[in-house]
Length: 426
Ligand code: GDP
Ligand code: IMO
Ligand code: MG
Image (cartoon, rainbow, N blue to C red; front, top):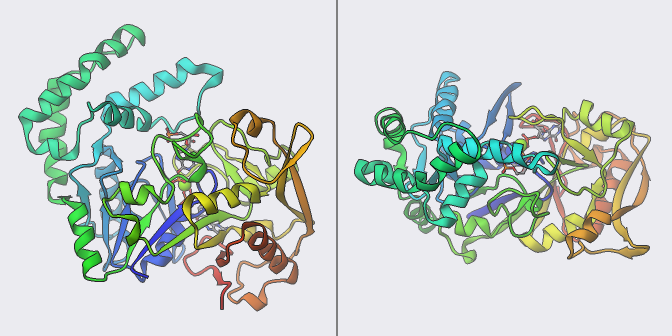
């Protein structure tokens, strides 16, 4: 399988980092194709935890080339901090490649994200306040600044001037903030940041194609998730990029015929951080159980995640949107002590049973979950390595997820560690 996409099937934080790290062992290249440092991907290797925001999760292996491709938005200060953090742990970042076509997140993008969320008040999206939306907006408005622009100081200054023509007054006059200073920004980016990252800048599309031609194995690591997708998610409560598998093509410059396998990562229950509809959300002691036992707090932002039962209506839609070939289920161990477990199998909307993701957002806001209830397994599965050793009720739960999604489960996470998983197909 030369090229594989890993994609979140819910609202993020499914455990993509853990399985990307596991798959990376067999890969030559791991590529981030969208998003930015709104992502927080956690890897636990030999008891040591590493949380990554921008650098692909394959970086921990010496033989991997980690690639930040054109679809990603890059905050250079964050990238440099992450490189320093990894190098301090003894992880070399020498092989890192950053696309010259990736767009930069500049400090004013982050500031705009913060002030706009404040302006929205009760209607806020609950963004990560990383400047993701404003940076992608500039890209679409064609006033974005790309990594390659740093290589031509004159162009960089000119583009900063163009970009700030409206945003300077907007920040100063509408939001009462200081207008950014072009000279100061230029000095920071050209004199301070560029020397730190210039050796990583590359034509990553060419690199990826060279690797494909050499039949090397490539993993495309999605950030965020299907229902945070700008086009297919629960708009406007979404991120500003396309995490769905198609984003791996536009975000890197490979055609769809190059994608051989699409692995959907699904948590055994559901979580969401930030605002927006969530039909299977819980507000009771089970919600607290998922938060406390599952440590459901944002990897970067520390926010408490909203939690609920597994939603197979959403998963069926994610199967379609991403052409998932399989599902890797994570955090099944977090359900170990529950008496009963539930799967949302359909919605009730205005008194009617609906088995598909509603097309109209208003209907999704009104959707009430219809559950299939199953007995829990009440056994610690965190050390289980083989399918047969999983308790019967846990196996039934996994089979029900396969049944409702129509796609096989390949792997099951039973703990955060790299080796804590069960191969369900063996
Ligand atoms: P990502 O954004 O999809 O990479 O996921 P996050 O890293 O934000 O959140 C997933 C959390 O669950 C991390 O703390 C992981 O270490 C942890 N994790 C991943 N898989 C498992 C699993 O199977 N069991 C348990 N208990 N924890 C897991
Ligand atoms: P990983 O890759 C969970 C959510 C935010 C907010 C919405 C928009 O770790 O799964 P943004 O800052 O992107 O403009 O925020 O998207 N969000 C995530 N939620 N996991 C993530 O990444 C997320 N990245 C963004 O909470 O609701
Ligand atoms: Mg995360």
